[in-house]
Length: 100
Image (cartoon, one colour):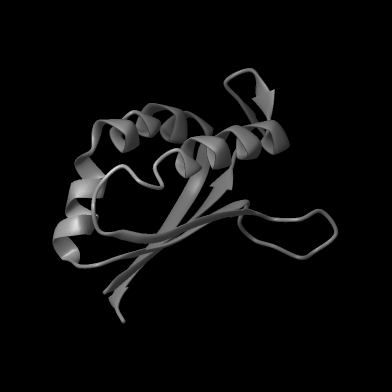
């Protein structure tokens, strides 16, 4: 099993919206990827809560049956369609994939 964790720091404003609204949109779009390919075992998206210290705004924690499932997810059209939005709203991104 592969665990795939990604964190994004969002720009203060982008695409005509502020950070909080873009985080909400981002979460909604990522959650739409939950069942797009066989082998996605878990897909959870969190938004940093106001009042709690955080260095990133959005986090994705997902698990895949194997590397082939993760690879299929990465190139699936629904996931690929997110990339333009992500590039427009993100300030930075960190990712780690590891075997569980």
